[in-house]
Length: 134
Image (cartoon, rainbow, N blue to C red; front, side):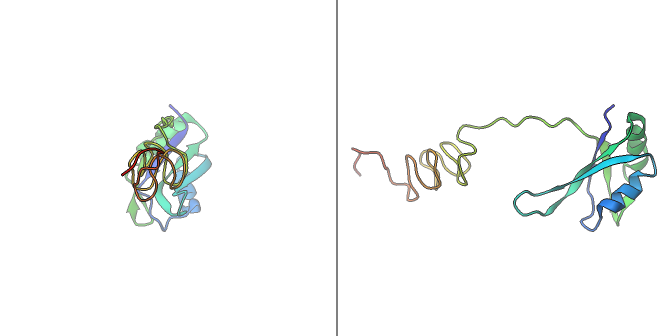
């Protein structure tokens, strides 16, 4: 069993110290990582707690899953390994995606092959290929 736990349904009022105190009941907490939204910085009400041994991790799941922490019932489970995200065609080419990206692609609202508003179709959706008339 791994030494890392996933903790869900954490109250937004709970602090890292509150979590450390609760998990210290079953063993030594080596680290705590609370998840925040990268764009807004808002707490996602979940996180990871690493215990010093696999035995303590098992005890934490058995003892603390369903426990009350700052007026909220938390869930505690073994953390699964993070999966590699597969990149979709055009992903990561800017705010509005590239060809086939988030809100663009060929014919998309604001996308296009590689720029904020550029590519095969611009912001207005008009063709920008030379030689093609409307």
